[in-house]
Amino acid sequence: MSPQRLSDRFEIRALIVRYSNALDARRFEWLDEIFTADAYIDYRATGGIDGRYPTIRAWLPPAVNAFPRMCHLVGNISVRLEGERAQARTLCLNPVVVPLPQGARPVMFLAMWYRDRLVRTGAGWRMSERIQEGCIQHNVPPHLQIPASARA
View 1 (spheres, one colour):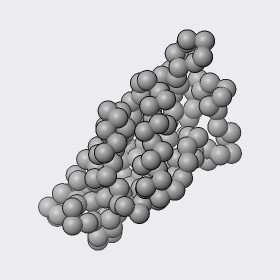
View 2: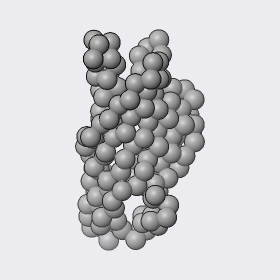
View 3: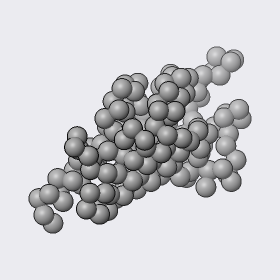
């Protein structure tokens, strides 16, 4: 494998990790360095919305801040380089603290796959598409449950 291909793979993997860190640290401004301005993002598999990056960027802070704690652990990252474009598929394990009206704070557990399309820009690799694919949901409170048909 050429040094350029190794560098590209490393940069893409670092971008995928940075996305997770941005959400967990509530550093939403980091997302501007992860996505292209017109990226398409689809979070419907876990109960979110889909749309172009500006819509998602406005939606994410209140959606994420509704949960006091969460973490995204990513792994099994596969990257396929196609010149100035790439595709990636990443497993994400995401435990989330859910505050309930009665004061309870159970932890729900989500597992999902991210399917990404990336493009090399003058500023480095950026995601031009991110689509969640549902996998596992455990201990999800009734008001947050997503039908299995919507997760697939």
